[in-house]
Length: 288
Length: 257
Image 1: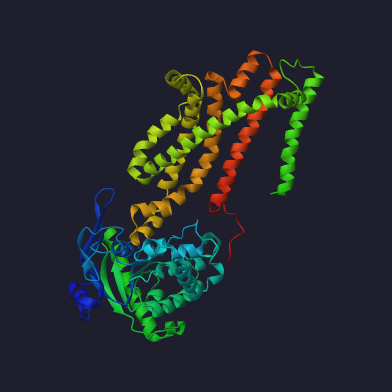
Image 2: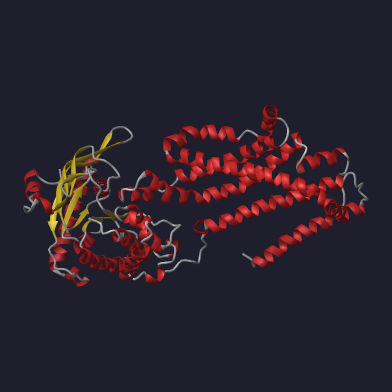
């Protein structure tokens, strides 16, 4: 038990929001999967809701089910129990426009960067019907504009494998945004990058967020990244994964890197750090 | 890595050297031309008999191409069907391996028994020789698609058909073209074997007749022609591969940092 029940309940008390404003809602969601000997619960009794245009980060030690949440929302896996509502309707009831970026490279190596970025337009309605009807130049403009915003114009006709890691990540973000997604799901998008490139991309992501205002769910183990980018940060504990804490990061936008030197920022990240360290320690004790 | 031109000149020199050594060997030991003709005699035979060889070469090539195209088409279809589902792949794999390990020559008598001598058994042998490499490779290409690529498509709510068209098929293309190079060569071998066993046309038949007439230089001339045709088929497959799957054959030093 990472936190006493009353404390957890107190932290979970979210300010009341009107129903239409809620984009994602988890009601007692649980996910089990078959392990070698017994069923393993990857995510247990998860309750939270995310408002339209909010930037939320999920953080916690590895194996706590952070990525599972994104896979549940994007419909790659189905929950074992509980309900997920997106824009007020149960998941699967109607198509949701989702933009997604995984930690592992998922750009298609046989397409140029621009054609990769345009890929969602060939699949997601209503764009795909227009794509078939050859109304192509508007989409090209859209892709070019996004690539320009992240400084990739010169590389639009290159193949993904010709790019550096940071460039690829910028291309993913463009691809995740091109179809004006209701939800932007980012799973450790900057995990494999050096610190400088990562900070540069935080800035680019923030600019795109301010400009396009999608609802963003970011999964990260980088506490600075969570605190710098998000409005709210959920901390999770492992085995079974569940949300143990919720912190607000009410810093004015646009934020710049100097924010990270302020006392408010560092006390937030240290708080998160302590929470995760506790969870990690408890987890280790249970195993022993 | 040495200069590419130098490498090519070297391999040409090795080939020429082999023929020169062969010529010198025959002359020095005065080898009976019924046993081993000199390369110069083979070339002469090839030139003088060329008009007579052309229809047979055309027959062999047509048979090979029909069998190969059938094999590649059926192979892609079966490969996609088996590769698309993990279960199907695991269930069908042992069957594919055992079927493809049958020497295809052994099937020629059966085809002759069913369809009589002529072009049909040759086409069927070419087909059966080329279908398995295509099935196995395409199935592997489809089945080994990175799950992340499919997850990305699923998150966009792509249909199974869209995932197949935009991800699985392009992903399997390098595997398919790699198999084409093997399949076209095997189809060619299958055709010639079938012609040797049961046909009155084609290069295979020419070799058989020439050998029974002890026209050894014609046998070798036909062999040289076969080699040239085989190289041509392989080259076409290799060019197609390079044209369509350049992304899978990337080189170092093309990365921007």
